[in-house]
Image (cartoon, rainbow, N blue to C red; front, top):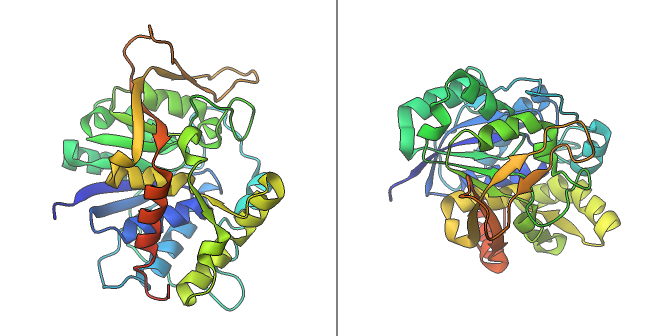
Length: 323
């Protein structure tokens, strides 16, 4: 099987953790590196969480394999993006990973070679792999935008960028207009969308339809119990706010799209990001008019919900301790 070389940029985060679980269990991918970015948690916590997750997941993989290095990202957004850490903790837990490493389950020794900074790692892989490389961006686009500032040819030179962020036909989830990842650093998102790179936007139009009910994690062995600890705070928040007991799989859907793009129905549309100071800051302005000019982004507007959930659970079941 010819593998897809991929770099995963993330801000773990409960759904980032589930996306990393999907990535490391997918034989189609060669995960070259994981880069951390400020988003669901501060930059330092994102780096720490990513390294812990790689170590924990690596210990449950059905076969031994080399684990990817994790690279720390910058702590400041490109613009003036703000994060409400208290609100984020209410969803992801005080350290970002629910109760995964609380109580008797202690964090493993961090795995994956600690590497240079995220910006340097992304740039090096973009230059080395070119069109063969896929970048999956699961958090704010700060790291990618900084790469673009350093070398405007880097992002257009990769095969594609699949990102979780934005919304086309529905309201935001952190303000009435803006989705969280884009709102964290609107200037960075605008830079990436306008970079000339081949971008697929996997936004709220489809990720809100990707839902894992808590009952699907009931029973089982040590790995499934750990997943319940990972997702419990998030599921409780979802139940209180939306009446749904479970986890919305925002980031796993974007990761899955890098492996099986046929899970999504996309249209090529013009996308800009509102970077002003008003209430629409962070909005992804998607031109849906029939007479709109040629688009710069593949925007996901439909999803095979059942096909995705079946694929996701199939990969989770491959870990030791699921049954």
